[in-house]
Image 1 (cartoon, helix red, strand yellow):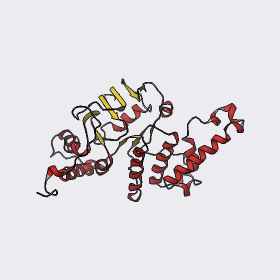
Image 2 (cartoon, helix red, strand yellow; image 1 turned 180 degrees about the horizontal axis):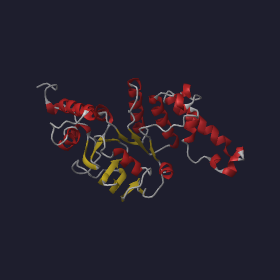
Image 3 (cartoon, one colour; image 1 turned 90 degrees about the vertical axis):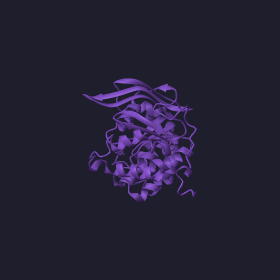
Image 4 (cartoon, one colour; image 1 turned 135 degrees about the vertical axis):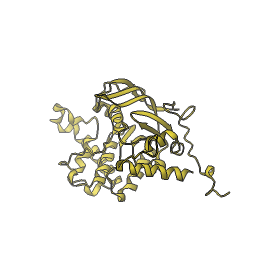
Length: 304
């Protein structure tokens, strides 16, 4: 029977990232981020209730789930932009509990936002330079003595221009950040994240609102982060993107981790199907979920 008609002939991506069965909370061979018992409630609503999860080092991990699953809230907790009700979590063996966001970033864990945070009235180049850490000129006394920081400033600017060139934003370096398109702002935020030489890059819906013409460029840059030795954790609703670039997938629903595994296995997991389609597949999910539902159905058909 030909490979086109044999369901089992489709190659399965071998990750070698986990120990034992691929199940919610499974141990990883070399985890860079570990969270235990992390919860966050808003009034009577439990937004996050993660018993245990480990993010593998050196891989691209996708965090997926339906709208309202708690993905962005979980991101905010891990990066110090929100405080949990309970739980502990470690990055590269160091506890991040009670560590403010700016110190988390200095430790090598950098995140981007679904709604970009560029400073619109600064130039693109100045936005980039803000991303560099340990700048001598940030000290009030030293800022008055240019000979102490001028050489470092030149090195930071050279690095910023190099990154802008890589992201094809060098022609815009002297323009106001507010003049960039939505996709260009996503590229700027990712480029600025690299100014601090991060170990782990967390991207919150990097494709949201991006013109299709820039989608492939963003995908290539995400893959390039892994090539450069960084770990990537990203939230995404585009299931095709997840399948093509993710090494590992973590699925959230109603604040909990309901499935983990390589993209091939996760797309066929009943818990994932239920999370996106509902436990009763004949339920009217409404227009907001239509694209996700169709994407999951299509991917399941593809895998079969």
